[in-house]
Figure 1: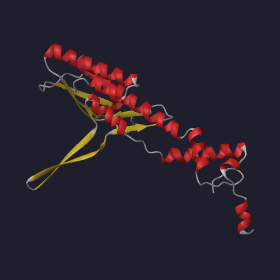
Figure 2 (figure 1 turned 30 degrees about the horizontal axis):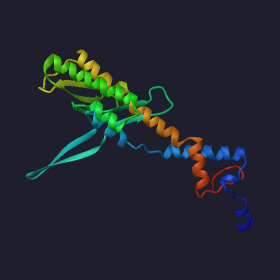
Figure 3 (figure 1 turned 120 degrees about the vertical axis):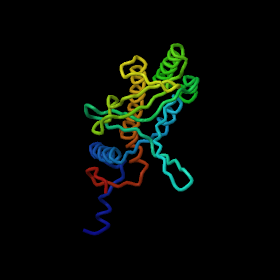
Figure 4 (figure 1 turned 90 degrees about the vertical axis):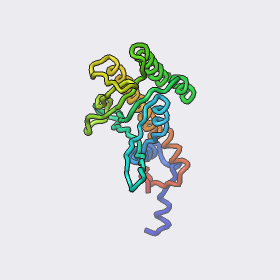
Length: 220
């Protein structure tokens, strides 16, 4: 068969039958899902507004100088199909005054994030009233096999360095808030994944892209 004959058997997406288009979308969606890399910037920004630092710090010493190396964020997730999927993170927390206002300025439509900020502010106000201090905490992950929110633990202290027990209501409420924030991250990741692999987005990519298919909708 000549090269010209082979070329005649290739089609643009718009030329395919409905069934071939469906197959082409499925193939592209699977490829997009495999290659999808989440963007964490908005989650790191939201965390910082709440007072959560998701950046690992490793200190490396060299001679007389001390250099602090900032690693990547510490969000972990799995999804989006199996029981036990979810997101979690490790990091540290310090009280940020008026975080509820700052969150609303940067995420004006996100009522779920507003609620987390409000409850975190209320928890700090309670601690301030009872002990005259602000809340500080360290969030850790206790399981490397899974990534859901229940892999997270927290150690909570006040700004004077006094540690609260694991069963203290302050610790429990703080950990619940951190897990709620992990849920918020997971929902965002899932929504982004669903959007990128949706028929609408995939079809637009196939229609505008420089792709060719055989008659069955298999990309060539």
